[in-house]
Length: 549
Image (spheres, rainbow, N blue to C red):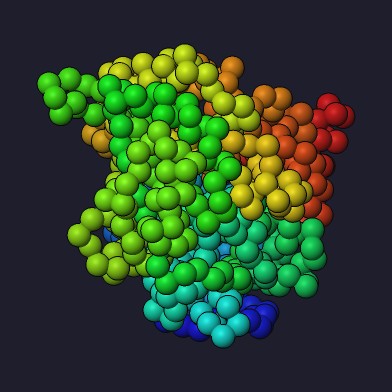
C-alpha cells in the first residue's frame, strides 16, 4: 500500500510518446473520433508518468473495459445495453494522472465523472447522457491511522470497510462515525454528509473531517489552509462532482467502549406492529445520545399460515453493555418488550457486520469491494423524507397496505431516529442542513434482479406512488431529501447552463438555505462549470445567462 503524499506534485512534463499513442490509443468511434483520439494523445503528452499510461486507460475497444466499468457499479438498474457508457475510463495512480485528465477533458470538451465506490443511487458517478470520461479512484485508497493523535488520513477510493478494518487493527476503543454498508466508497459518502450508528453521539462523518486534499479545475492541489474555509465547508456535505476532486480526507477518530450492544426485535402486523411504530415516533429521538434506533418495514410470509404480512424490525445500537441498555428500554419503551435475549454484546467492528446483516463471515469481508450487501437488491430505486411530527396511525396503516402490493416483494421502508448530537449541531455547520427539529428520516427502497430490468418502470412507479402518498405527513416547503440518497425525480439540471430557479427546485430539498452559499463557492472555484452533472451545484454565471435570455 503506497503512502499518501502530502506535498504537491511537480508540474507535468510535456513529453511526446507517439509510440504509446499508436500502440494503445487508436480508437474507432463512429462519431467524434478525432476528439477522442486527441484527448488520449493529450493524456500521453501531459502525464508525468507516461510509462504508466497504458495501465490506467480503458477505451471502449479494450478487452477489460466492461469489467472495469461494472466492477464498481452497485446499482444494476444502470447495467443495460441502452445505458450510456463512458468514452474512456481512467484509473489513476498518481495526482499527475488526475491533473492531466482534468486538463485534457477541458481542452477537448469531455465531461468528467468521478467514481470512488460506485454507490450513487442514480448512477451519476458512471452514467451520463453526454460524452464523458470516468475517473475511477480505485487505486487511491491508502489509509494511515494515527492512534496516538486519534486521527486518520484516508484516500477517496477506499471503501468504508477498509477504513473500519484498519482502525480496528490498531485500536478497539477508537472508531469513525459512518455507515454500515461497508462497500461504499468514502469519497462520495463523505461528500454527502454520511450518517451511521454513531451519528446521534458524534454527528455525521462530515462533521468529523478536519482536513482534505483537493484538486481544482486548474489542477491545483489544495489542503484546508490553501482552499479556504468556504470551500472546505462545501466539500463536507455539498455533494460530490460539483467543485473538483477530493483526493484524501483527514478524519477525527472518536472514542468508543470496548463493548457495544446490538438488539433486534421484530413484530408483525398481527403482533401490534403499527401501534409500536406509532409509539416509537414519540420515544426514539429522545433516547440517550449513545443509542441508535431504527425501524425497518418489509413484507414477509407469515409463519402461521404462509400468508403475507408486514414485519417491523426494531433495531438498537448502544455504546455500552446489555445490562445498561435493557433497563433503559424497559423504562422508556416498555411496550416493545425488549429482553436480554434480543441483544448481543460485541465490539464496534463486529457491529458493522451485525447491522449490515452479514452472517457467518470473518472481518476480512470488510475488505471485499464486490460484496453484495443484503441491505439492497442488485437493482433498485430509492427516495427519502424527513419527519417533523409523528405520522398518525391511520397513515401508517396506509403505508403498510402499499407493502402488500405486487411490486413491493423486495421493497422496504426504513425509519432512522434523529435527535442527540444532531440536535446540537447548527444547520449551517456544513451543507447538510437536516439537524434539530427532525424526529426521524425515512428511506424508501424498491429492488429487483438484473434480469427484471425490463420491468424496472413498474417498480419505479410503485415507489413514486408511495412517495406521493406520504407527502402530507413529512417535511414541507421544502420537502427535504438526503443528498446521499440521490433522487433525480425531485429535479435536474440542464446539460449545459442551468438557472438558479431550476436548480433551486432540487437544491433546497437537499440543502435548504445552505444552497445559496454552495452556489457562491461553486462560482468562486469552478465558474465555467466544468465539474457538472444532473444535480451538481451551478455557478452564478448560469443564472446571469438565463436571466439575460
